[in-house]
Image (cartoon, rainbow, N blue to C red; front, side, top):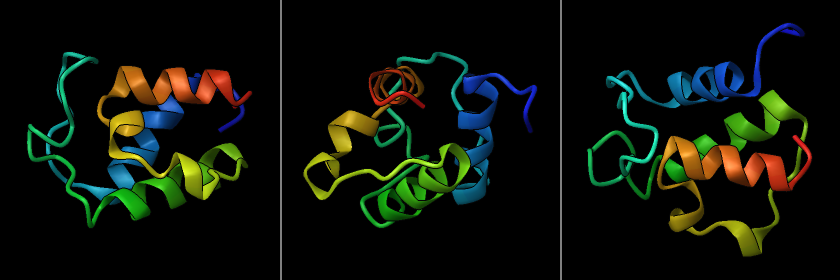
Length: 81
């Protein structure tokens, strides 16, 4: 997907780990909405690592960093993805 934007690639990774409707509000909690839970977080991290060719260090495995589409986008920006 070379022409896809970061957001499209992020949504693609999310769709790999859930079949639930992704919230329209980018700041809505993916955990509070039921889209993700603590068991799905490692799957999401793996999907993001694969999609963006990055390695998320163990110290970053905090649900708060991946709580919403907006927070995930910020994380990816900060890590050059």
